[in-house]
Image (tube, rainbow, N blue to C red):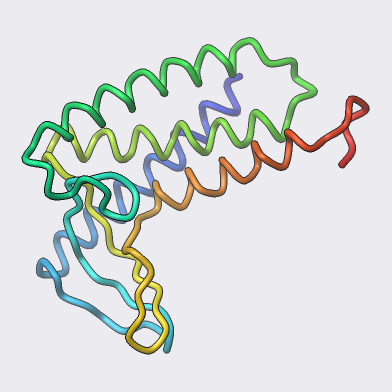
Length: 155
């Protein structure tokens, strides 16, 4: 289990360091073009994914803090009970755990999550996200992929 928690810590550190870099080098809502379909845009998200409940009046902060804490405890327990052979599932859970704690730290410190990865095409923009969100997405994909394995462990 140590290697999976270590991976979660790596995700957490990458997330927090990237957010510190953004907040100390950019102004709120500033954008920096990187390549034709990607830019860095510093935003503060009080809601969940895709800014869901962003303007809900403040109660959502503690709802998402509680949800993140419960999910994190659940994931640690789940990881501790998994057999060593369940590598893909453990990898997915470790990614989700690191991302959940990264966004949890933001909510506790600031009341919002720092987002800055902005993918777009012409005038259409995917909702701005961060390293934690990316880890959660990749982790969930791995968990879904793992769920399609047959009992012998192959897809």
